[in-house]
Image (cartoon, rainbow over all chains, first blue to last red; front, top):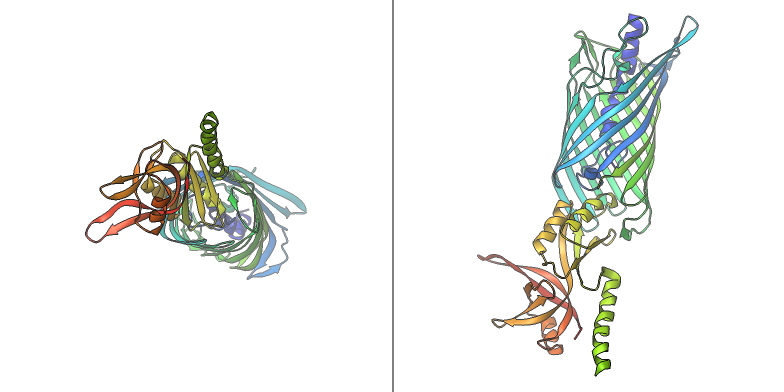
Length: 314
Length: 174
């Protein structure tokens, strides 16, 4: 049971890496971030339904047969609330997810499932815009980000036999973690380019320390409709294509490095975004891994899909 | 005589209606602001909100033209600095500002100014060819609708002066 738990932890802990990134997706682009701290960024409630599926066992980056036929599904619905603390300068964002984690595996010819549902770790982060260069029809902006993840999610869930679940199946990490990075946005007429680089510094709790991670996102957006944007507000359809990457260091279990953890993942994420006017938008995105260079033996990501919305607060 | 008394206010009303079609109620004052950086409709919400906070009755934002229009009641003072600050707080950089307002010409200390109807605030007019043309075509007590560009004046050693209005076009109302 102990080795099973470790294998799960080693194979699935990278799933957690997706959470902070997704939680910070507080507007266009869908998964990455924007340097904007006003408009939709500063006045809307953001949430989405995200489903992530892992079912391929990878060994040194190559798919191998899994005798336990493990499959993990993580469903997440976060609540993201921004507050424009200093107009056009500082945005403070509160994000809390509801998580539903399910791990299925086969042992002794019997298929079993472990599930864990509830509120996960809360993240509070500030985004400070330090550069803004506006011109007719375009703008370039840069912002710095600093985040704090609070251990609000339960991290001591146990299975029916009373064994502590692997960290990847827990709702929270139990640790206080910090992250920091930069975001750049360049918009010109119907085109948009967003890129961000965020380093997550993770700490230890219950003898487990998730490896630090460097996340990077590159997002291109193209306004399909209306072809000529006359008067605001107008229904609008955007085509979005993102590259979402994460390079994670190995986890540490009671001080020792775990060889079956960490690695580099790059996802290709096409998406569509529809704005119905000034009050709301919906977006949908499908993420497919194009690079999964994971250390040791881990469960690889099959796909993620996201259906989100944003509603303005007035 | 009676007919004339009826026709004059009617003409004023119809004259206002043309302006109104684009801007708002007949006693509105229209301000157009060039908004630099306005490339994303999703961030125009903040701009609209900030402009409404300046007392605008109605705000229109033209994304592809990078332009915002705000209609104000005439009784409200024309606060150019407040407008620019609203655009900045909305997340953008203000550019050229144009105003279309009803009022009359006044002469003070040898310079011509424009007194806005309703609020009574006064702006000096830029001494150029358009002003000369305006003075030729209007009488001192005429009520006109003036379209003008707001110009900041900065003189070496004297800092910033109250903005001037540079006449673009005019319409004689009475």
